[in-house]
Image (cartoon, rainbow, N blue to C red; front, side, top):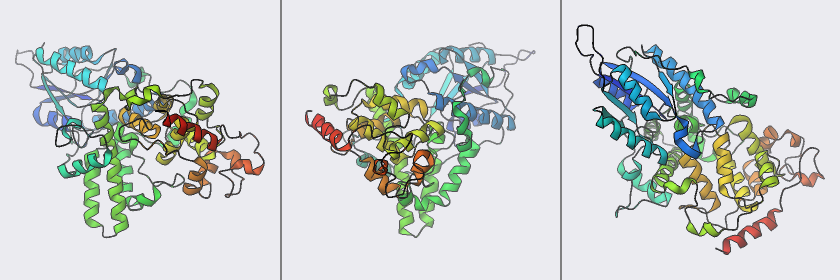
Length: 480
């Protein structure tokens, strides 16, 4: 390692590179806190090397969010007397090595990632830099627990959520969280490239509606969390399944990019429980905490089943009779033109906003994998490219859960009926009217069955018979 020296030959004091990844925040950032406490000069860096993710490089919607989140992080660092150094290249290791040589850094620290490709990449980087004499420190920031740390008494990983979450709770959910540093020591000596050179924004005007729905970055994530945790969370249990209501936290993208800390969210929930006497409110808070637990469970499953991004976890599904001709059916599903109003509303919400209500995510996934009997990977890939909150662990777990081929899978006979689900969770058709304007004039009694109106101009007939396709799916499952 080359070390910088002052003109009089005295070595520069300890310099640490803080490698930002999916932790684009200053509060409760263990790697940053460690560097600030132990270094005379801290250099924040972001390395853009998407090719390392292989087939699961970030999609277009995620890249839109990333661009704006990085912009805010850079501004926040400048307010603290520092600067975000951005570099890009085919792989992160040579970028880090060049930065170490240029800045004379003696140490590098980062917060751990758990995707299969990231685990292999980071292990190689750590070993390579240690051989060069560079000090490496890594920390846990994106999860409440290390995926390998939560296991059964016999050491085996969990495969069912309920048991997994009980074990997490027994380990203790409340964990201290650090505050953001007031200033970062030292002045970065390396300019790096501009954010615009990463070319993260879409080349077509597809994202024009995103900015009316989202404000990426740590500041807005904390504001959104405060609004939800201080009020709306007590109605979460009842409101979370109603897609027409603002009943969820809408923090999934912020959690994925690390703009807010899961540790801080859980701590606030525990504090809120201590102040809440209303049993319905306490149930809602616990339900939201359990949803954070599902996020932990997804990482636990992916860590222990790294092939689950592309392969069904239930080996019997190697022989499942998926439909091979995807053309018209898949395109109709993607475009929100299936003829089932709540399905089409969800798919259009996804396209226009980069997000879809969680209840509706289950419905559209059920229609694709069971009524249309298309492979769950078709849906996983589409979500991956169009969701601003696309997370490899949660995306893989969710699709396999609905398709019935995962570990903690829904029973094969659970096939959501989009008409009944629409009537139950969108009884007035408000959600459908918002996203499927062709149906806005229909009476609430038939808005989820528009064919009863004798047809609606510019809106298609149902893509399949729900009854017949359900029976075909059940027969296919029985064949396993």
